[in-house]
Length: 411
Image 1 (tube, rainbow, N blue to C red):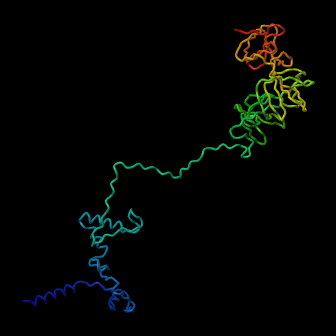
Image 2 (image 1 turned 135 degrees about the vertical axis):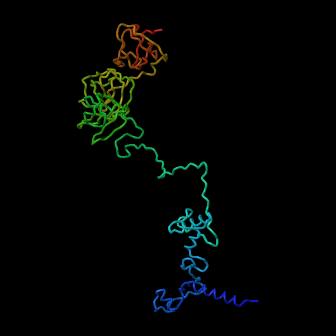
Image 3 (image 1 turned 180 degrees about the vertical axis):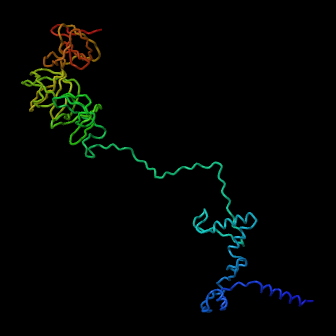
């Protein structure tokens, strides 16, 4: 049987319990008493407070713990939920709370994507699973340092001829050129391209000497030449005086020439026509000389005497002065080439000829003395007379003359 007294007692107990509990204020209450309690003033009307539509606006209520406003679908406010999660005894809950507290701070995102807000734990879904830390490998790979600047390979130094940059140097590849000393005095070599006396090295170049140069340099308006043998520098001009001049078609060897002009020929200290370079040594018409150097200066050919008496010109004023002595092809008979040794058996000196002939025009001025032993590399017979060619290139000797033996072979 239903007890009506029990129902009355239960209803009275519920009313007393609700009367003792403080009811939270309703923000949408339009009563003037509530407005006075909230400090809105008495002039606030119901029209000044806009109610959102019930279909779109979530239901708002107060937190049962701290009394703050919270949503209807959440049992407590966010701070109370955070404190409750951090105070949970379980290990997972403490880790989740620390993760939530760390990620909720503004300006701190996850390492996987800076600037993006990490997922937040929800009481309905439980704590956010945390990704376990990656275990480092036992043998980590070697990390190669990346260079701060891009590595660019540059070609090696490039050799540029000085003519290409407006200089006076020789062409690419150190082309050698020949220069002759034209002044009367000796020229002292410098350690550097300068006129300064402190750059002197104590070595001299002599007048008429032909040397090899490998570089030319202009310094303060003066031209300097560098010796190819590395001894140093010499100036090309000094005080408007020509010191060195370039020569063409230079060659060394041994040739024989004869003076064929009617006048005497005076030698020069250098390859030039200038009267200032005269030596006082005169060659007579018909004299035969030995020449060991030949060159061309200003389209004129000059010959250097092998006995160091100076230079002579081959032509002058379109007149042939010196003529080279060559053996005639039809005179050579019984020619032989090899190596023999002869000695001078006559009592007089024997003058060497430029060709296998007795002619005085072929005399070279070089002699061999009685008892001298010489090496012969060629022999030829001309008109029943044997002529012997010296292996050092000085010229020819006759084996006999006027039925008298001059040279004898050594066995």
